[in-house]
Image (cartoon, rainbow, N blue to C red; front, side, top):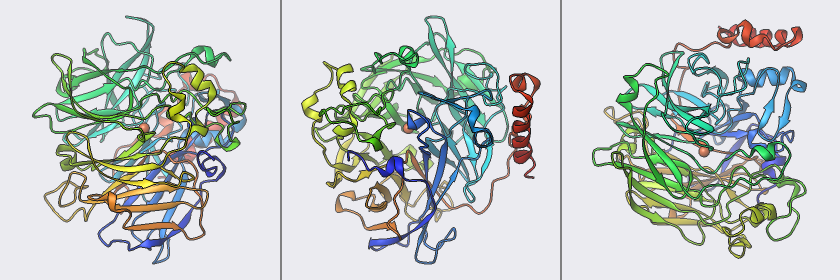
Length: 572
Ligand SMILES: [Fe+2]
């Protein structure tokens, strides 16, 4: 097996974990949340399936677990999309980019948890952020009335709007709002998508948006990052829609070798009425990325960790009739998962000069083993973002069984097939900031295991009354723990590392009390335990239901929508 078969065969379910090795420290606390698509098998490409949220409690005996056990709790994202889907599944047609239906396109909200103070959101590249109750995991609200987003990105008004956005919005620690994106089709200066910066004031039910003047591109804006004064957007460059493939043809579109970056001053945006075009400062960086993280302090420049995705094409997924790069048929349990990295990946720290577009490298690391730089962990406290010390990265290793021969043919001339013919270990690595010098690493030599999204947990957060909510006594990423989940057909495991010395190996490990297995997980994030749902003015599903949006539905479908609205809006 190139990756555990449990990724696609195991259902999401609640269970409890026990300490399986080492000693669980007393100064680790809070919850780690995970987002995941619940792989149903209905879609050809599983990453578009409807979302699930999972929560690992780091304090034993909480959330219903016995005193010596740790609760793993899961729930489907119960947003209007999911509820309508469950009420009328036959109306949803599977396609290579997810479901379509007379109700519109469901917001799968399956990619990343986004903790923000005492509130929790989940995100997706093709939908609005969704607020979840961190205690019950119940759906709370979607973010921003669709009219204030300027309507859907495309396919017209519907009960479930199709909104191409961003899986990693970022909360502004000084302005009490969230920066994200929306893409809209344009024909000038060329046919493509224009990115808009979106701002949501967390107290309200409306957003504001500003298109980037003169920008048209064919990719996606997977991440938004920020400094104190700047919003940073870029074309992720590794997910491209191929119209010919959607019509049943062979895929010919490939990922770029570099990516455009757009920088806009926050104050410039917020001074403009919604909908006003704004001209960004432009730069380019290689390789393309999925994730990038700017240092919040920009007093000596805009410094960004750039997690490269060299030859990682997320538009490619495994089909049942595929051969892998070694010539063997792909494993049935890997069908519907993405084609994994076809080269070792680079990590960089770059500094942008917005006035000139110049990009200065402050450090770069790439080695023969740096395959599938998939996910990372950092200190998300305001202090940690302002002066980061360590950046922790999980490399999943080379997995030739999840690189198809079709992909190798498409990338002929760019892929070194000999370099991807053998499985290699996974690694958890800590990089020093600035400069991205690797300071220590821990090897996962058992290639039947797959490490997945790590999370940084500050030591003893909340003890300094003058510090921000998520800060430990020594912020930056070195003082605390790294939670490293390990997917395995032998049973799910959670390794806990001292963030200052991951090379020493786990200080403790948890496993399911019944050796439970866990399916595919995407991003994770840590947040402190909260006691109650935050007060806020929130959008109600029923507020968006007007005659125009219901026009395409028959009487039975309208009754489905009315029932879901009553269910959601009648909750008091
Ligand atoms: Fe992501």
